[in-house]
Structures are given as structure tokens and as C-alpha cells.
Amino acid sequence: MYLFPHLAAIHPQYHQSTYHRATVLAFLCWSFSVPYYFVVDRVVRYVLPKYIEGLPYAKILLCGAAFIEGIQILQLSFSNIYRRQRQFLIWASGAVLTSLLLALVAAVQLRSLEGVAASQVVSVLIWWQINEWNLRDISGQGWRDWIRLLFLFAWSAVSFWATLHIANDTLSRMAVYYALTSTAAVGRCFATYV
Image 1 (cartoon, rainbow, N blue to C red):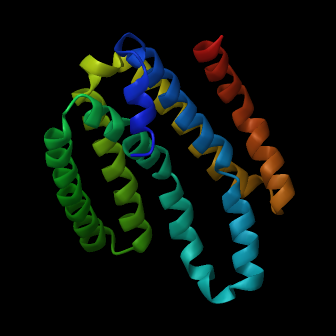
Image 2: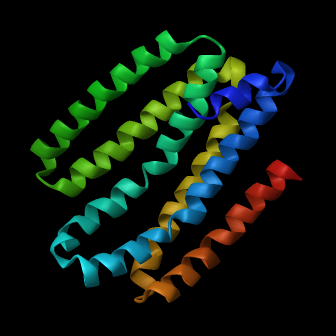
């Protein structure tokens, strides 16, 4: 909601370009902030060892943050500006039901909390995509834009998982992660902002 007043002040002719740039920026911010998990991992292991068991779920749920920020910052703001709050609320309610259903299926079928955490990432991805589809006439976003964002997300997520297996200490993990993601992120920045 904190972006709403600023977006409302922008002339409507700039809403599509603002939405596009802000969406890319949100995904880039998520991608660049993923290494904070490496620091959290280290802190939990040394300061809060009784929470070590929660780290595998945290790293899975971290992937969902990429979509949550887009929903909360951009999609909600644009839904408010264009008076589509009711539609947003209906889809949000559907997203909650989908989330619960996917969690139940994952718990029953997979019998693992990691499966439940992964189901929540899938749930929020579905919600993000439905909102993108519903706002496409406002945002100007289309399949090509969504595929590019999902590529950046997938590249960052795969780099994150690979880094966990390639490097052992916090600093080397951060270096490896940024080395793996910098090409995709810089390319996406260049294509969007230059």
C-alpha cells in the first residue's frame, strides 16, 4: 500500500512503463537479496542452534518472496488505482484456498514439510500469474515479459541451490551466487533500463 500514493501521482500514460520497470526491479532486488539466507544460515547455526531444523523450509520459502513482493507492492497498488480491489480480493481469497489445498495435498501425498513449503511457493506463483493476467490491460505486460521475469527467477533460484552445493562458507557462497546470477541480472537491467 505504501507505493499507492506515489503511483496515483504519476500520469496514467506512464503507468505501463512504471509497472514494467518496477516489476523488473522487484525481481532484481529479490535476486540480489537471496544471499542473506547464507548469513541467516550462519547466524542460526551459531546463535540459535535449536532452529537449525527450520533452515531447509526457510530456503524453499525464500523463493516465494519474489512473487509476494510483486503482489504486495505492485499488483495491489495498481488494483487500487484502477478500482479493482474487489477483483483482487476475490483472487486473493482463491489464492488462500489454493494454498491450503496444495499444502494439504503435499502433506498427505509427500508427507514432508519441504513438500508443503514447495507447495506454498507454487501457490504464490500461481497467484502472481493470475494477477498479472488480470492486470495485463493496465500493465501492458504479456507472455514475453512474464517469461523473462520467470527466467530471471529460475536462474536465480537454480543459482541459489547450486551455490549451496558448490561452496561451504558464507563469503564463498555469496561470491559464487553473485558470479552465477550477475550475468542474467545485468542483462535484464540493460534490457529494461538502457
